[in-house]
Amino acid sequence: MQTTPDKRSLTLTLLVLFQLVCLGFFLTDVVEDMGGSGWAGLWNAHMLPELAAIAGMMLGLAFQGRYLMNLLRRQSHLERGLGVAAGQLALLMEDYFRQWKLTASEQDVATFTIKGYTIAEIAELRGSAEATVKTHLNAIYRKSGVSGRGQLVSILIEDLMRAPLVADAAPISERSAA
Amino acid sequence: MEKPLRVWDPFVRLFHWSLVVGFTANALFDAPGKQTHRYVGYVLMGLIAGRILWGLTGPSHARFASFPPSIGGAMQHLGQIATGRRQRHIGHSPLGALMVYNMLGTLLIIGLTGWMLTTLTFFGVEWVETIHQGLVVWAEICICLHVAAVLFESRRLGVNLPKSMVTGYKTFMPDRVADADHP
Image (cartoon, rainbow over all chains, first blue to last red; front, side, top):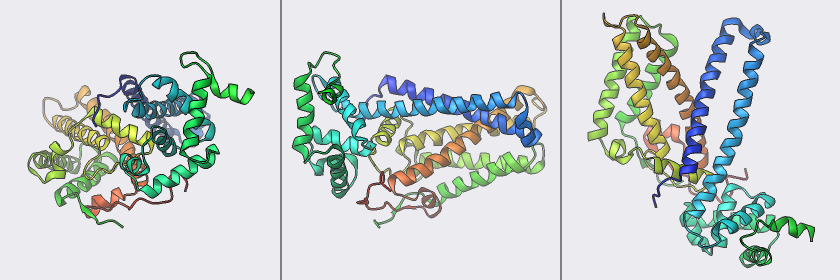
């Protein structure tokens, strides 16, 4: 099961970690500064820009963290090997998952389902009970408005057949325009 | 409730909470240069030396061999968080293991530089003080991260990790039907 870590996600993880430490460092610095002058120091000409810089760092960190989670999610599915056109299919699935507002767990279950794993196998892979997987599946069907596994797969197949795999077509926007 | 699993032996628990008390005392309450600051430091160094020996000879979950530092394992752990997969770790998790080595190393160097400051050669030498104080800040940041991670993982995996470090037993909740994503 152990795989060599993906370079991109590893680099990003280290970057996020580094910035987290920087943030901690600046925070302790600010706390120390404030400790010296109390809340009155807040109106110091130097203090406000410092706080704004920290807020900026936090925001940047939040975005990077989210991007990293997406990257890790994609990678943990790709490493199982989807074969040809894997990238395109994965992008298409992600588009739909976002549109349906699936949670991380639901996305994972949906991906395994589309790949043809049974409920028992998915439960095994995810380390959860079959009942939980069924709950996820119900949520997936409800959010996507399909009746079952077959329809879930056919949505993707339909898009793949309509749009050439190599082109940069945007299947979902085409659908809504039609 | 599933059956509680015995994970942390008494020495590991004693070690953990002694570090908490000792580090807090020295970092926050006990002024450097005082006698007690020094003695607490020596006790902590003794405990860490004991933990390292225990890591080579102790029971399975205490052994370093059972939680080797692994970047691949850590990334896999992150991937499980990203996908909502809940693989239970009976001993240290891969990310937790990295924190263990980080804290052991950091505290050792804090202790070493602290001891150096008591010697004639290094008393009041600036770079030694800088390392000593800088690593204390680093340790404090890491402790915050550690506490946040323990709470996060407890919630994510349905196991009370702080309690396991007190009682020595991990009780994994049987998988809930209601999903953690929909409270």
